[in-house]
Structures are given as C-alpha cells and as structure tokens.
Image (cartoon, rainbow, N blue to C red; front, side, top):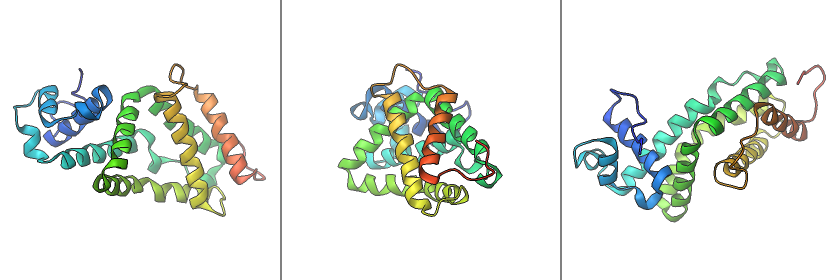
Length: 204
C-alpha cells in the first residue's frame, strides 16, 4: 500500500494522519490501528501511539488532516467573488469538484469512513462537526454575494448537491464514470438558477 502520501520531510504528525487516511480508504475502519499506521508509514513501532495515544486521538488527527486536504483541493477561500459574474463562479466550482473527484477518490472514501464512525461515537461527532464548520461561513458568504436572500439555506442545498454527487461517483452507482468538467459546470448552473433565478446582466 502506498500510504506515504505526505511529502518527504513532512512533520511526523502529518505523515501519521495522511497514513491513517490512506488506511481508512484501503482497509476501512477496522484496518486502522496504531500498529498499522506505524507499519504503513515506515515508522518505528510505537511512533503513532506517541503522537496519538488513544483511538479517539488518532481519529481526530485523521479528521483534522482530512479538512486541511479538502480545503487545499476545494479551495473555497479562493473562489472568485460572485459580484464579478456568475460565469467565473461556475467555472471555479466545477473545476474544484472535478479536481476532487478525479484526483482524490481515496480521500472521499476515507471521508465516508470517518463520517459513518462519527455517527457511532458522540465524541467524534462533535469534533467532526466542529472541524467541518470551517467551510460553512465561506459558503454562506458566497451564496450571499451571489444574490441569495437566504444564504444559509441555499448553502445547505449547494452542499447537499455536491455531497450526493461525490458519494455517487466515489462509492455509489456512478463510480465507473466521473462527470466531465462541462457536465459539472452545467449542473452547478442549473442548481444556482433554481436557487437564485437569473440575474440581468450576469453572464453564465
């Protein structure tokens, strides 16, 4: 297994978290142990336990790293202002989602493993939700700039659409074929039109 997803010279904590995510994607939750992380990362036995002494701590490290890597892939903070025209926003959203689907499918699988485990562990649920909240405010602001009168509700609809598409393409009935960049753009266009309507003078 190519578990060494962290670049050479990366901090050990980062290597451990990346390896945990790789193990989750390949072996599932049962395959994630401190010993397995040590072996897959090529670390001396006991290294993972020194950094994350409990299973909860190991799972939290994986959730935290997942959020960091998703932020780098989806680049929510780098989305163009909707005031500049909806066309640029559609291009950016389609590109970010396409990049995730085509370049990081294993990260999606790890994400679902952690989400399911969080439903069984209240302490992980709290941490998972708190960590994921970093994306909420930027998305709400994005929808407000796009003209939404109810940005929180519309952001939820946007997230739900993306989540459903990602699940279907990663592990669901559409796993064999990822939508093209143009197909994703059209999907976002139809979604935003349905939520926000069309605005005079805005090109799509």
